[in-house]
Length: 167
Ligand SMILES: C[S@@+](CC[C@H](N)C(=O)[O-])C[C@H]1O[C@@H](n2cnc3c(N)ncnc32)[C@H](O)[C@@H]1O
Image 1 (cartoon, protein in one colour):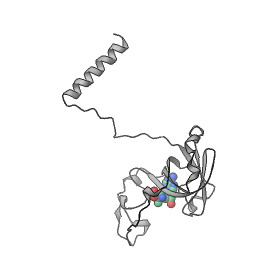
Image 2: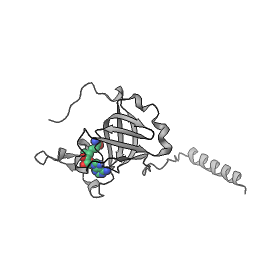
Image 3: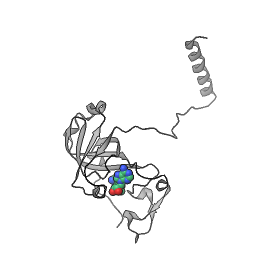
Image 4: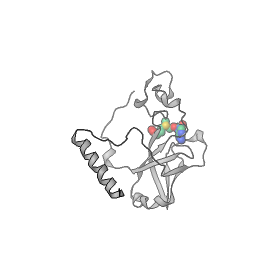
């Protein structure tokens, strides 16, 4: 049988499955992503919360064109992978908010804690400048070497007119 005939038969078989109500779903139980780049910073890990410090977000060379136009924005979201969180830490579902033991534990999704089932970090940073495949940003709380998953400009869509946080 020729490859085109095999493809036709597979298509026919799939159509028959659909006709009897079988829906073939893509596998969404595992998602693979590749870093688009990495954080470069010269300051110590202990200073990661110092929002005045500047980090460099270095994209892979082949993705540099994807930054064209970003200079027009004052702020961008950096979405990253907190790669130093251990497998055990990912299983902890309740934590003291902001590490303050005097406060009762809350669910991990009610916090910005780095240990979570999917260790995705999200930080709004000030965009200082772009140079080729690099963004220089102020206020990124990610260690040197942190893999970057995405960059999105900040605009009015995300601006809340007012908001509540726990006291
Ligand atoms: C509280 S998390 C919050 C990150 C982000 N602002 C958010 O809300 O998703 C930031 C802390 O994660 C830790 N951290 C930074 N980079 C990390 C990495 N690559 N792996 C593990 N922990 C990291 C640092 O201790 C930093 O203070």
